Image (cartoon, helix red, strand yellow):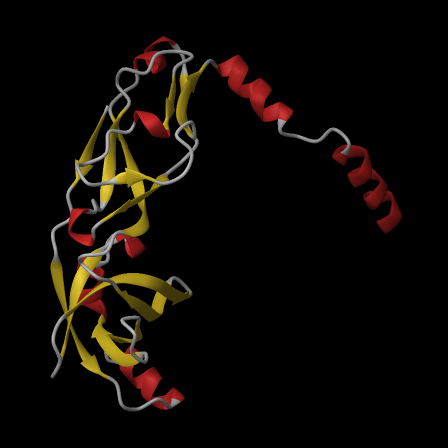
Amino acid sequence: MTASTNQQTQYLDVSKRTEFTRASLNQLRKSGHIPANVYGGGTEAQAIYVEEKQLAKVARTGRTEFFDLRIEGDQSVPVLIKEIQQRGGKVIHVDFQKVSKNKPIRVKVPLLYNGTAEGTKVGGILQIQATELEIEGLPDDLPSGLEVDVTSLGTGDKLVAADIRLPKGITLIGLEDELLASIVMPRLAEAENEADVDPAAEPEAAETAEEKE
């Protein structure tokens, strides 16, 4: 039911950062660069900066991307994005995590749903319950995403984590029966939504409104 999106190793050239004042950080950002740190590997964190446009090319899917950092004056190191800090929708800082190509790591990769489910052709609704899946494998084997073909799903059908056919060398982390997607009829979907509402919450909300008055 699925096919993997293979991830090819990419390179990102970065420079060492030697100034740490607020003014120097602001100047870096104004010039189209992003301050960053590299952690792991049994060494102290290393301060670097990266060109914003170059980062955008290799970090399309955020933390699931694996690539090599080429630090000026040093050997390249394989990394994953550990954290991205944003302000007003703009990246202002990035943390990279060193990884070993010979040691399995766990990451969450996006689920890319494709196709038109058979059940939707007769009035059913495709409900997506999960948009990512946690897997484990060697960095070079990790996919950047998993394509999920929902074409065969009929009304009442469900897709769970165990249904995902993972690439060779990749294992699923978590429950095999985790619900990822399902096809439900409109009335059932409406009933499920109503069941999620706590009936006791409405009187409480009314009481709160009366107290404010």
